[in-house]
Image 1 (cartoon, rainbow, N blue to C red):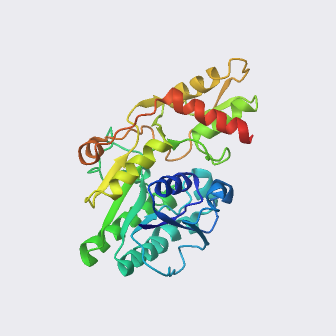
Image 2: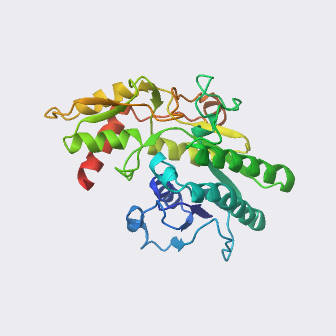
Length: 310
């Protein structure tokens, strides 16, 4: 099997590379390194079954030879990244997805789109099920990411219905683990970076907004199963255990007993989701999947990684 992974030098993409190589696939990574990092895949580049192409998927692409699977993971995915790069974010969600789908059509390949829980916006339904259409502000600061992913889902379904392309859509909820960037603007690496540097932890609002954190290997297992399942509509992959941001801050401080860090409060950003929790019934039913890594274990592994790179 030959699998193309766009955004394969990113956090999740690099873990997907490892999984598909371990499953015996030849892996071709397509990445322009806007937010990806070659360090994430440096340990893979000597493998005969691994190829790296420096290319922006928002530009047309041709890949010689057969392609069996395409995983389209190219996109800025953290608030710091898509707020800094709003137009490339919109382009990779629209033009990039169009190009990836065109490649899938030409090669008669399966294609899996990395979508996001952000398609639900600041949800009015809790927990979020795949049949919920969302509450998104299209012209707010987060709209460049939210609407790029919503468009990506729409064009993916159009290619499935009109051209018969074998498509899959995964809606990814908060994911964490090694190879995240400390400065990517997400709450978990932000807290860990602050506590490791001996700084106070910055909580927005009163910290009562909730998140549900899935360890990256659990996510990758769900994605692998979904790719091989004959189901074209979106599937939530995430951990349904809900925690407030304030509780998370306290847990991370407690992981370093000698820490002198305190919690400080700043105003809540515009359109920040108040509650985030996946309903994973569809994943459980279709894929036999549910997360297995307990948060305490995953947080410890992630803290050790950040300690090694700080």
